[in-house]
Image (cartoon, rainbow, N blue to C red):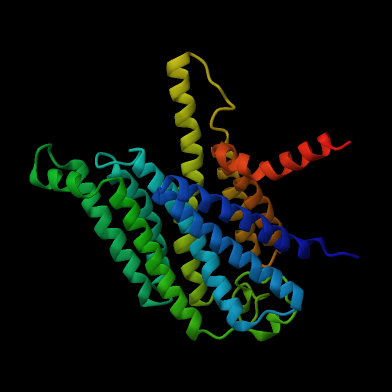
Amino acid sequence: MVDLNAIFPFITTTVSLMFFIGVLEQYKRKRKIHQLIWAIAMLLFFLTAGAEALAIAIKSWNPTIFKIYYVLAAIQVPFMGGGVLYLFAERNVINSRNSWKAFLIFSFFWGLFGFLFSTRDPIFNTFFIIAILLSALSIIYAISPSKTAFKQWWQETFDGWMFAHVFMAVSLLAFILMAYYALITPVNLEILKHGGEVSGLPWQSNPSDLSEPRAVVRLFSPLQTVPGGVALIGGGFYSYIAWQRSIKQNTGKYQWKTGIYNIYIALGALVLAQGAFFSGFGLGTLYISETISVTLMYFGFLESDKITKELLLRPFKWRKNITASSP
């Protein structure tokens, strides 16, 4: 009997490669930073899905490949979320007047995980301190009287672009630290032998023992994936709602199909988030979730860019025309 779960990484690898090529082509046309960030995210998606497919093909996880796979899988979500934040900066959705709210929202997650995980390793205090500093500055800005020197300095410095830069900088810091801990942390080789879905379980000596504390390297994952997921999912739903409100104000009625691709992208991110969450407890939902997720997001991307969609369909139209003209 064919193991359907083993097929999903091969599908995900194919779709994510097409997604990467499409976003890269879009970036070459438009040269927008959010497209470059998304292209990197899709390249990471392709590499991690490819690692899963390779492990299934050879029926074993190479320990080095597993470590690279796990670290790259965590950082791909902040790249997707960061792409949304750079888009918001370009469109002035996040600007110097409201960036303090964005800093407070994301500082909450960095500070929360930094505080909770600091008992496991003092390195997590770094993120708690970053969160406290950013939160303090944001609150001072919010309560400061207008036309003060601090207010002016903030508005000249902390616009949407700076917020996106800070978001990516904190995410990359977590990525670098995670890569270091992945390098020095041993893995359970027995779990790698079957070559199937493993998520972060090989970092544990006994994954079935839920009382065993998670390895420190695994704690860097939520520091990246949760803020990245909030940016990606929240950004998708926010864009759609804001668009519909604008349409309602201008025309007097909603046009639900307009901008629906934002919903596809947000739903794709939600599917990926739940799959990764349950897989972290050994429930084996990651592979199918990745396939559904990347397919939804790719469909949303094609709906958002008609030129890329036309380029994708052109070979099929050409073949159809050749067939129709054949005697």
